[in-house]
Every structure is written in C-alpha cells, then in structure tokens.
Image 1 (cartoon, rainbow over the protein chains, first blue to last red):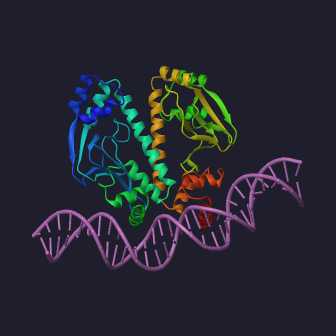
Image 2: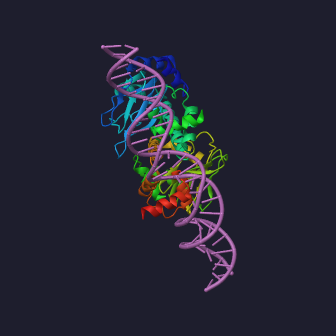
Image 3: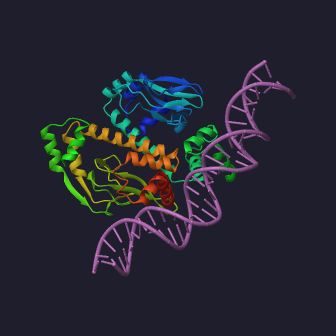
Length: 189
Length: 189
DNA sequence: ATCACTTTTTGCCAAATGGCAAATGGTTTC
DNA sequence: GAAACCATTTGCCATTTGGCAAAAAGTGAT
C-alpha cells in the first residue's frame, strides 16, 4: 500500500486527504503462484497495482502455442484497457508466476477517486504513457536482435526476473525455443 | 484537412465552432521523399497529422545499423512524446519515404486548442492510446514469428505499403536481412 | 537505345536456430 | 533414500537465416 502511494507520488502531488481517500478505497489481494489475475474472455473486475511478485502476460497464437508477451514485475499498475467506464474483457491471460501481492480497486471506487481527485486522471495517464513507452521500446528492440543479444538484454533489463522465472517463459518472451536459450546460456558462461 | 477532422471525429464530438477553431490553427506541410520530419536530437516544433504518404521511423543501434522501427501511414497523428508543454527532443528519425502531406500545429496553437475545447484532451488521449495499443501488438507479434510469417503478416497489415516501400526498409522493420526477405518472397510466389 | 545508378535477386557457404528425444539435474512426497 | 515429477541441458540433424559478392532487374536521364 505504501509502495503504491510512493509510486503514484512520482507522477504528481497528492495531499494527505487525497492519499487517505485512495487508501480507504484500496484492498489487498494475494495471488498464489500459477493463479490467474486476468483470464481471456472474462470481464476484469478491478484495477490493480502489483506490489510484490511477478505476473506473466500470455496468449495463444493461431497455432495454439502459448506466447509470453511480457512480464509485469513489482510496482506496475495493471489497467483494464485504459478506460474505467466500460467493462473490459481481455484477450490474454495474466497469471502469477510467483506469489504476488496487489493493491486493487473496484471500478466504482476507482471512478470515485477519479471524480474526487482533480489531478488523478492526469497522474494515471502519465503512468500509462510511461508503461506504453517502455513496452514498445522493449518489444521493438527484440525484433532486430539475435538470440544472444535478446537474452543479454533481458538479464540487463529484468535482473530480478532471471532467477525467478522458468526458462521456458523467458524463451517464449524472447521469441526463441527453450533449447536454444539453454544453449545460449551455455555459450555465455 | 478534412481528413484530419474526419479522423478526430471518430474519437469524440465537436461542434462547428470547435472545428473552425482547429481548422484556423492548422497549417499544411509538404514533405518530399527522403525529407526529415523529425531528427534525433533536434527539438520538435509542431504536432502533425499525416494525411498523405508514408513516414519511416528509424534509429541507429549500438552497432551503427539503421533500424526501421515502424512506418506511419495515412491518418496518423504524430505526437511529440505525448506532452505539449515541454519541448520534446526525439531520439529517432522520422523521414518521408514518399511525398507526404501533413496538417501541423505549433505547440502554442495546440495548447490554445487544448485550453479552449473541453473534450480535446480526452480525444487526443484516446488517439494516443489506440496508437500505442496497435504498436505494441504489432511489434510483439513479430518476435514470436519466423521470417515468412512476419512478411505475410506485414502485407496483410500494411497492404498499401508493400509496393511503395523499398525492400530494405521492410526487411529492417521485420528484423531480417534484405536477402532473406527476397528469398522469402520468392518462396511465397 | 544507352549509360549510370539504384534496388532486388541469386549463389555460395557459414552460423544460428528449430525440432525432437534422451539424459541430466533438482525438487517434492512418501 | 527411492520414486515420481518437473525443469533444464544436450545430442543429432534439418531448416532457416546471415554475410558477402556478383548478377539481374528496374529506373531515370540524356
């Protein structure tokens, strides 16, 4: 909870009253390893902020293969399609790959915060924009790199994930097979 | 110009007066093939909307290779870092690869529109969000595909570009070499 | 039509990656 | 510790892609 407030304050100022409002609406949610946070086709119930753990975002391509699209690690806001008003039904899965702790808000409570705190919208917008930029940059870089470069980049950008995430997920994220990644790791040593 | 208004109206309503305001601030900008629209390190002067032509976004990786990150085709808003107030200095190049026509606004005029038209901010925000989503989805998919799949996807998503864009740019965008792409094309026929 | 110039294709071979299955290593449960 | 289970590594070979250079095709100007 403090983690969430601390994170938000990087993007704009809030007074004590506003912080109290946010805190009063927030609930904690625990996810165990392998538990879903979102499921494709199922409406999303709340807005969440990941304070501890790692979540994997994946979908199934037209060959039925499971593709890991990215990882969400600590201190990331998980927003449903960027709008609060409409019910959002994702087309991908979000699944905990470690035990996780989130701070969550119901759509209604989030709406209340938006309506009460003048700057909230712009803070959230800034966060979204930042996350989008990071995602685009990360995914873009991968395309032009070979396997080794992708992996070296990965361990540099997600140093905390390398040892917590199964190899197969990392390989899928990097767009290479698990055995290739294993060989790449051997060559790097 | 009509194209721009038409595009914007998909994301929200504007009355005649508001449209007139926007129109009055807008200027047309022509770019010839190979002309820069943005240059890395040079402050961006205006907000633009591409009505005709294709622009290529590229940067130089740490090996000095030119990497095409994406293409901007007709009916896309080109925004400087998503904020109007601060001067934005891009780290990549935007260069016309056909003759182009843009509708442009100075930062000051854009600011004026933002201050005058209540819903403008949210319209722009929606557009940005849409573009971000598209970019992320496109780049993400590429990572998990082989060369042939990437190219087939490309011609499906950018049917209008295939015949207007040099092969080398497409290859760079897809993360494969020009000769590989040429061979892939041969195999597809 | 010719020349100069650029883009695309092709040939050749090396390197990287994929696919599959077996082997190894690690962890948990009994 | 043994057994069962899962993740990772490895071997083997096929396929894909890269790198480089030459050939072919396309474009534009005179």
